Length: 180
Ligand SMILES: Cc1cc2nc3c(=O)[nH]c(=O)nc-3n(C[C@H](O)[C@H](O)[C@H](O)COP(=O)(O)O)c2cc1C
Image 1 (tube, rainbow, N blue to C red):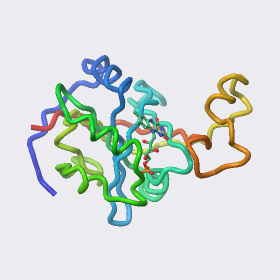
Image 2 (cartoon, rainbow, N blue to C red):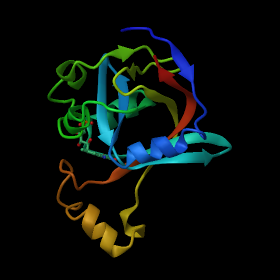
Image 3 (cartoon, rainbow, N blue to C red):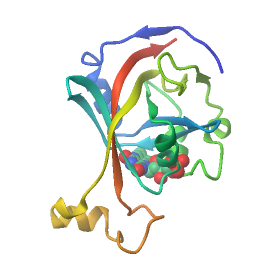
Protein backbone atom coordinates (compact mmCIF):
# COMPACT_ATOMS: atom_id res chain seq x y z
CA UNK A 1 0.00 0.00 0.00
CA UNK A 2 1.33 3.42 -1.01
CA UNK A 3 1.30 6.69 0.87
CA UNK A 4 0.73 9.85 -1.13
CA UNK A 5 0.05 13.54 -0.59
CA UNK A 6 -3.57 14.29 0.24
CA UNK A 7 -4.83 17.82 -0.41
CA UNK A 8 -7.90 18.50 1.75
CA UNK A 9 -11.03 19.57 -0.13
CA UNK A 10 -14.21 21.33 0.96
CA UNK A 11 -16.99 18.87 0.28
CA UNK A 12 -19.52 21.69 -0.28
CA UNK A 13 -17.31 23.41 -2.86
CA UNK A 14 -16.84 20.09 -4.69
CA UNK A 15 -20.47 18.94 -4.32
CA UNK A 16 -21.48 19.66 -7.92
CA UNK A 17 -18.41 17.80 -9.30
CA UNK A 18 -19.18 14.82 -7.05
CA UNK A 19 -22.85 14.71 -8.01
CA UNK A 20 -22.05 15.06 -11.72
CA UNK A 21 -19.61 12.13 -11.48
CA UNK A 22 -22.20 10.09 -9.60
CA UNK A 23 -24.54 10.26 -12.60
CA UNK A 24 -22.02 8.13 -14.53
CA UNK A 25 -20.85 5.97 -11.62
CA UNK A 26 -18.26 6.37 -8.88
CA UNK A 27 -16.76 3.64 -6.68
CA UNK A 28 -17.25 2.80 -3.09
CA UNK A 29 -14.46 0.76 -1.57
CA UNK A 30 -14.73 -1.45 1.50
CA UNK A 31 -12.22 -3.59 3.36
CA UNK A 32 -12.63 -6.47 5.79
CA UNK A 33 -10.94 -9.77 6.56
CA UNK A 34 -7.89 -8.79 4.51
CA UNK A 35 -9.98 -8.12 1.37
CA UNK A 36 -10.25 -4.75 -0.37
CA UNK A 37 -13.14 -4.48 -2.79
CA UNK A 38 -14.68 -1.69 -4.88
CA UNK A 39 -18.10 -1.56 -6.49
CA UNK A 40 -19.63 0.99 -8.84
CA UNK A 41 -22.53 3.05 -7.50
CA UNK A 42 -24.76 5.63 -9.06
CA UNK A 43 -27.22 5.90 -6.23
CA UNK A 44 -25.81 8.24 -3.62
CA UNK A 45 -26.76 11.22 -1.51
CA UNK A 46 -24.46 13.95 -0.23
CA UNK A 47 -25.77 16.12 2.58
CA UNK A 48 -26.23 16.46 6.32
CA UNK A 49 -27.85 14.23 8.92
CA UNK A 50 -27.66 14.40 12.69
CA UNK A 51 -25.62 17.59 12.34
CA UNK A 52 -22.87 15.77 10.40
CA UNK A 53 -21.84 15.72 6.75
CA UNK A 54 -22.81 12.38 5.22
CA UNK A 55 -22.53 10.36 2.04
CA UNK A 56 -25.38 7.88 1.82
CA UNK A 57 -25.05 4.83 -0.43
CA UNK A 58 -27.54 2.16 -1.46
CA UNK A 59 -26.12 -1.36 -1.67
CA UNK A 60 -28.23 -4.36 -2.65
CA UNK A 61 -28.20 -7.15 -0.08
CA UNK A 62 -26.59 -9.59 -2.52
CA UNK A 63 -23.41 -7.52 -3.07
CA UNK A 64 -20.08 -8.73 -1.70
CA UNK A 65 -19.56 -5.09 -0.66
CA UNK A 66 -22.53 -5.45 1.70
CA UNK A 67 -20.78 -8.33 3.52
CA UNK A 68 -17.61 -6.25 3.90
CA UNK A 69 -19.50 -3.16 5.08
CA UNK A 70 -21.37 -5.15 7.67
CA UNK A 71 -18.17 -6.55 9.11
CA UNK A 72 -16.14 -3.30 8.91
CA UNK A 73 -18.53 -0.32 8.70
CA UNK A 74 -16.19 2.10 6.90
CA UNK A 75 -15.87 2.97 3.22
CA UNK A 76 -14.22 5.38 0.85
CA UNK A 77 -16.00 7.03 -2.07
CA UNK A 78 -13.65 7.22 -5.07
CA UNK A 79 -14.55 9.88 -7.61
CA UNK A 80 -12.83 10.27 -11.00
CA UNK A 81 -11.39 13.66 -11.90
CA UNK A 82 -10.89 14.43 -15.61
CA UNK A 83 -10.05 11.66 -18.07
CA UNK A 84 -9.82 8.15 -16.65
CA UNK A 85 -10.15 4.54 -17.73
CA UNK A 86 -13.92 3.87 -17.91
CA UNK A 87 -13.19 0.14 -17.71
CA UNK A 88 -12.71 0.68 -13.98
CA UNK A 89 -16.40 1.53 -13.52
CA UNK A 90 -17.49 -1.19 -15.98
CA UNK A 91 -15.53 -3.95 -14.22
CA UNK A 92 -16.30 -2.77 -10.67
CA UNK A 93 -19.96 -2.50 -11.68
CA UNK A 94 -20.30 -5.95 -13.21
CA UNK A 95 -17.87 -8.35 -11.50
CA UNK A 96 -18.20 -9.42 -7.89
CA UNK A 97 -15.35 -9.37 -5.44
CA UNK A 98 -16.48 -12.87 -4.53
CA UNK A 99 -15.06 -14.04 -7.86
CA UNK A 100 -12.11 -11.74 -8.61
CA UNK A 101 -9.74 -9.32 -6.96
CA UNK A 102 -10.86 -6.24 -8.91
CA UNK A 103 -8.06 -3.96 -7.70
CA UNK A 104 -5.37 -6.36 -8.98
CA UNK A 105 -7.23 -7.16 -12.18
CA UNK A 106 -7.49 -3.44 -13.00
CA UNK A 107 -4.05 -2.47 -11.70
CA UNK A 108 -5.55 0.00 -9.21
CA UNK A 109 -3.06 1.81 -6.99
CA UNK A 110 -4.28 1.73 -3.39
CA UNK A 111 -3.27 4.43 -0.93
CA UNK A 112 -3.59 4.12 2.84
CA UNK A 113 -6.68 5.93 4.18
CA UNK A 114 -6.21 8.89 6.50
CA UNK A 115 -8.91 8.30 9.16
CA UNK A 116 -10.35 4.95 8.06
CA UNK A 117 -8.86 1.51 7.51
CA UNK A 118 -10.08 1.47 3.90
CA UNK A 119 -7.76 2.69 1.12
CA UNK A 120 -8.16 5.49 -1.42
CA UNK A 121 -7.47 4.87 -5.15
CA UNK A 122 -5.01 6.92 -7.19
CA UNK A 123 -6.93 6.45 -10.45
CA UNK A 124 -10.09 7.99 -8.89
CA UNK A 125 -8.37 10.61 -6.78
CA UNK A 126 -11.19 12.64 -5.20
CA UNK A 127 -11.71 10.72 -1.99
CA UNK A 128 -14.40 10.87 0.67
CA UNK A 129 -13.71 8.78 3.79
CA UNK A 130 -16.82 7.61 5.63
CA UNK A 131 -17.75 5.79 8.82
CA UNK A 132 -21.18 4.18 8.85
CA UNK A 133 -23.30 5.75 11.60
CA UNK A 134 -26.65 4.28 10.57
CA UNK A 135 -27.93 1.59 8.26
CA UNK A 136 -31.43 0.72 7.24
CA UNK A 137 -32.97 -1.92 4.97
CA UNK A 138 -35.40 -0.39 2.52
CA UNK A 139 -39.05 -1.07 3.14
CA UNK A 140 -40.29 -1.58 -0.40
CA UNK A 141 -43.91 -1.55 0.69
CA UNK A 142 -43.53 2.19 1.21
CA UNK A 143 -42.42 2.83 -2.38
CA UNK A 144 -44.83 3.85 -5.14
CA UNK A 145 -45.94 0.72 -7.05
CA UNK A 146 -44.23 1.78 -10.30
CA UNK A 147 -40.81 2.10 -8.59
CA UNK A 148 -41.30 -1.17 -6.74
CA UNK A 149 -42.11 -2.91 -10.02
CA UNK A 150 -39.10 -1.38 -11.85
CA UNK A 151 -36.45 -1.86 -9.23
CA UNK A 152 -37.59 -4.91 -7.23
CA UNK A 153 -39.64 -7.07 -9.60
CA UNK A 154 -38.44 -10.38 -8.23
CA UNK A 155 -37.94 -9.49 -4.62
CA UNK A 156 -40.05 -12.36 -3.32
CA UNK A 157 -38.27 -14.90 -5.46
CA UNK A 158 -34.66 -13.92 -5.48
CA UNK A 159 -31.89 -12.89 -3.19
CA UNK A 160 -28.99 -13.09 -5.57
CA UNK A 161 -29.96 -11.03 -8.60
CA UNK A 162 -29.98 -7.34 -9.41
CA UNK A 163 -33.50 -7.16 -8.07
CA UNK A 164 -33.11 -7.60 -4.33
CA UNK A 165 -33.45 -5.04 -1.58
CA UNK A 166 -31.09 -2.14 -0.98
CA UNK A 167 -29.50 -1.51 2.36
CA UNK A 168 -29.00 2.19 2.93
CA UNK A 169 -25.70 3.08 4.60
CA UNK A 170 -25.28 6.55 6.07
CA UNK A 171 -21.54 7.26 6.13
CA UNK A 172 -20.37 10.17 8.24
CA UNK A 173 -17.73 12.00 6.22
CA UNK A 174 -14.58 12.01 8.37
CA UNK A 175 -12.07 13.18 5.73
CA UNK A 176 -12.13 14.41 2.12
CA UNK A 177 -9.17 15.10 -0.12
CA UNK A 178 -7.61 14.93 -3.54
CA UNK A 179 -4.73 12.49 -3.98
CA UNK A 180 -1.50 13.65 -5.55
C1 LIG B 1 -22.63 2.58 -13.23
C2 LIG B 1 -23.09 1.54 -12.22
C3 LIG B 1 -23.72 1.94 -11.07
C4 LIG B 1 -24.16 1.00 -10.10
N1 LIG B 1 -24.80 1.44 -8.97
C5 LIG B 1 -25.15 0.55 -8.00
C6 LIG B 1 -25.74 1.01 -6.76
O1 LIG B 1 -25.91 2.21 -6.51
N2 LIG B 1 -26.08 0.06 -5.84
C7 LIG B 1 -25.90 -1.29 -6.05
O2 LIG B 1 -26.20 -2.12 -5.18
N3 LIG B 1 -25.31 -1.74 -7.22
C8 LIG B 1 -24.94 -0.85 -8.18
N4 LIG B 1 -24.32 -1.28 -9.34
C9 LIG B 1 -24.02 -2.73 -9.50
C10 LIG B 1 -22.78 -3.16 -8.70
O3 LIG B 1 -21.72 -2.26 -8.88
C11 LIG B 1 -22.34 -4.58 -9.17
O4 LIG B 1 -23.37 -5.50 -8.90
C12 LIG B 1 -21.02 -5.05 -8.59
O5 LIG B 1 -20.56 -6.12 -9.37
C13 LIG B 1 -21.12 -5.47 -7.13
O6 LIG B 1 -19.84 -5.87 -6.72
P1 LIG B 1 -19.52 -6.70 -5.38
O7 LIG B 1 -20.33 -7.99 -5.45
O8 LIG B 1 -18.05 -6.93 -5.46
O9 LIG B 1 -19.95 -5.85 -4.24
C14 LIG B 1 -23.93 -0.38 -10.32
C15 LIG B 1 -23.29 -0.78 -11.51
C16 LIG B 1 -22.88 0.15 -12.45
C17 LIG B 1 -22.18 -0.31 -13.71
